[in-house]
Length: 145
Length: 145
Image 1: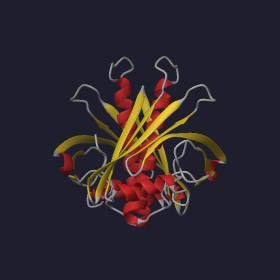
Image 2 (image 1 turned 180 degrees about the vertical axis):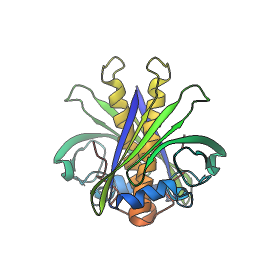
Image 3 (image 1 turned 30 degrees about the horizontal axis):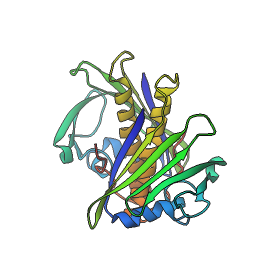
Image 4 (image 1 turned 90 degrees about the vertical axis):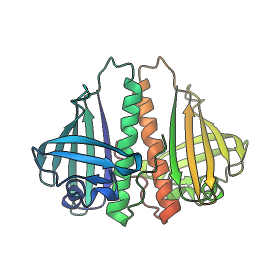
């Protein structure tokens, strides 16, 4: 099973793509930091300073300004594949679509995991919209668990 | 079953409470409009101009600046009860908590409904944070289904 989340952002695809792959920018809407520029084949360490947590992702595929595919969780026994697609509607508007696949159908925690995952993506993409369109970079890290 | 969503907003509880109950304010972060001020016992019509949709909610209980409880969906055969609580942490910070109860355990659409509901609440509360803290009122109505 998978989750799918789509948000329209009034910026060109190339600009939004950079917000993900440029480690200087990610801290404005999502993780605190990213260890280096996202490129195909690299393993990237993402940190959440606020929760003193970090994790690694493997970048499987990148099509500049169009799509990013990465994997995480293989070592934890449940590999998830995340696809971030940038669908440019016109020169000033892009629909950012995130699909996360790899949830296990008969996992007793399935519902909680899907709901929690959806929470994370809706939150990250809304923070991204605030950052991209209005330069607001302090929406992140306010979800309370 | 129910969903629970909590977001920290750096504003006093009274100010955030007003954003929900004052029909002039709701269009800055959530629905386009609300038919009148939210008060106990009233039925309120909420409109989404963008989707040409509207619905009604019944306000069951209000504790000023602390909690709002309303119901929707009874006529559609699945009444849901929504509780919005404003937990003021100090004079400048409030945790807004939304619980929506009424999902039916053996509904074949249960997972989709829970995930969709979570999406809606995370989105609304993040838009609320943008409006309250930064005066940004154009984050709403950008989720793509």
